[in-house]
Structure formats: C-alpha cells, structure tokens
Picture (tube, rainbow, N blue to C red):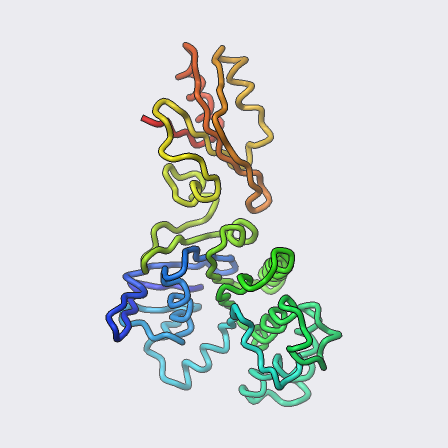
Amino acid sequence: MIKLTDLRKVYENGVVAIDGVDLGVAEGEIFGVLGQSGAGKSTLLRCVNLLERPTSGTVQVDGQELSGLGRADLRRARQRIGMIHQHFALLSSRTVAGNVAFPLEAAGVPRAERAARVAELLELVGLADKAGVHPAQLSGGQKQRVGIARALAGRPSVLLSDEATSALDPATTQSILALLKRLNRELGLTILLITHEMHVVKSICDSVAIMSEGRIEEAGRISDLIATPGARLTREIFPLPEPAPAGTVTVTFAGQADEPVMSALVRKFDVDVNILGGSLEELQGAPVGRLRIRLDGKGAADALAYVRERGLLVEVAA
C-alpha cells in the first residue's frame, strides 16, 4: 500500500533528515516507525503525503507514484490519505461537527451528504453527543478522537499518525490505540504511525521499522524480528544486561510461554538451569519473552538442541 524507494530529504541548511530509506507497508497492516527525537520520523511521514517534498527517491501509495503528480492530481491523491497530529490541530472557532466537516466542505461535498457523514464519523469515534461542543470544552483524548474522525472524512485507505498519543496520559493513550486498532480491523485501514514509545509498538503494530539518524536500522514484521538473532527490537522490548556474559544462553520464545521448557531440560537431560534474568510481554495476543540462563551438566549440548527443536531462538554468548 505504501512503498518508499531510496528516499532522501536534505534541507537547504544541509541537514540530512532522511538518508536513502526503502520501506514497504502492506495493505491493511499497522506499521510503526520507532525512533528518538531527531531520527527523521516526522519528515518521513510527511513525505508520504508530500507535505514534505523528498530531495530524491519515489513515494508510491496504493500503486500511484505521487512525486510526479500535478497539483490537482496530488490533491485528489491526498484525499485517500488521512492524517492525525500530535497536538490535534483543531480549529478552535468551529464546533466538533464543524471540524470534522471541514475537509468535506473543502472537497465540495453537498450539505446534506456532509451532515450525514459527520454524524456517522462522530458515532464511529464515540463522540455523537459532542457535535455542538467547541474544542476548548474537550479533554485531550476527545480532541484526538475529533482529529481521527476528521482524518476519516474522505474515506481514506491510508491513515498517517504523527505521534498521535504522545500528548496523552497512559489510560487515554490506551483508549486511542484501541480505537485505531478497531478502525484498522473494521475499515481495512492501512495505518502508518510514528512514535518514540515502545509500548505503542507493542500494543497495536504488526510491523515496525527502527529509525536512527535518517536511516532504517531494521524493519519487518514483529514476529519475524523477534525470531531473528541479534535483533535490536528484541533487545529493546526485553532488555537484559549487555553484553551477555560468556557461556550464558539467551532464549527468545514467541507463543511457547505456556510450555514447561526449562523444567523439561532438568528432567530429560540431567542439567542444572540457573535463570539469570528475563521478561515476558504479550505481543499481538501471544506471550513473547526473553530468558537468560546458564546450563551446567554433561547434557547441556543436547539440552540446547532440544530447545532449538521446540522452535525457540537460542543465542550462546562466546
């Protein structure tokens, strides 16, 4: 649905914000771009709808290459790309309904059709009773729901989220993430979101790219990255002291958390298992974890082979 090829953005002052990025987002998935401030995430997102013009490279959305389009064609293409902002970007002089209606007015949608669409969207985001209220009377979470409704007004196939939860408290953040997940599921929306918060990625993302200094360090489906030796994502989700002491074993598991693997090693191979550290999370509805252990005994090699046969990722520190 979104394909960025050798994307570069260099500002007039010489700052390289994006440095040769290749990125693909599949139709219907929630894709997170994770990185700290200054990594280039916001610039990358704004290049997708050409609010920022790339210095070089190509941007394709739903099979259409955007950077070569004229003004009128680009305006039509942008109607298929909704965007929600960190600080809501609502018009204070307009009511909730007026804010949601704004892009429909700009597109020339007739009044009756506009009113019906606004009512439908406010019901969808849980604000049907706030149509006549002004933004100043809303909580942060309610303001973001208005922003989401407005972004959906033109029935987009792609939704861009620019740090949409970073200004919200934890409970409100979870409610907004749950709403985005529901919209993804019910409307078939492809969502590209940027964030510096790992819990956002853990909560709703199918895939992730880790960005630093304008480049993508690693990218892929979360389930695939978890199973990749040395993946940075795994280390950040399940932090353990690094480097691992020589001779220790780090075991990463996805979906096998309910299997008594460690106790089976003791019974089957007559080894001592010393657990040095670990953590467990739920990702995409499945338990995923990372455990660091030390194995002692003649059956240690056979025990490690058994763990690998169970589908777990095993990394032995040299």
